[in-house]
Amino acid sequence: MPNDNIKDRLFVANLLRNVRIGNCTVKEALLAYPKDTQDESLIAAYHALIHYEADEDLRYRDALYKEEQDDYIEFLSYTLGKGEDLPANIINNYKQFYDSAPILHQNTFQGFLKGFWKSLNTGFKRRKE
Image 1 (cartoon, rainbow, N blue to C red):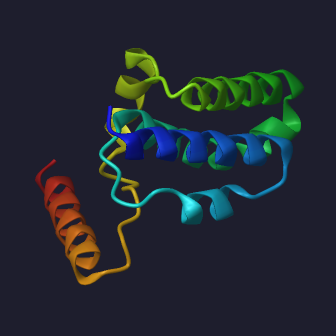
Image 2 (cartoon, rainbow, N blue to C red):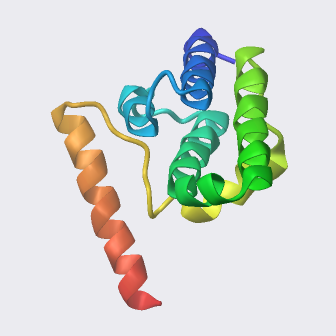
C-alpha cells in the first residue's frame, strides 16, 4: 500500500474520532476529507460519515441506535488508524451509494472535470432506469 494511503487513513481515522466525540461536525470532516482518493476503505468511510449525518435525528430519538452507530464509527476509526483495510463486507455495502454522493475532487480544473463528468454520467444512469 502506498505511503499516501497510510497517511490518509490515519488522517481519516482522526476525523472519524473527532466527529464521534463532537470535536467537529460531519460537514467539517467531509470538507477536510482527502480529495480524489481511490482507496476503497476511505471511500466507504466517507459514505459512512454521510449516513451518520443522515441518521442524526434517529440517534437523538433512539439511544441504542446511537450507541450502535457510535461504535461503528469508532470501529472504522480504529481499523483505519491501524492502517488496515476495512472489511470487504463494509466496503461492498457502500458501493451502491457511490453514484449519489461522490468523493470531493481537488479544487483544480482536472478536479472540476472529474466532478462534471461524474454528474453527467449519474444523471444519464438515472434517466435510463
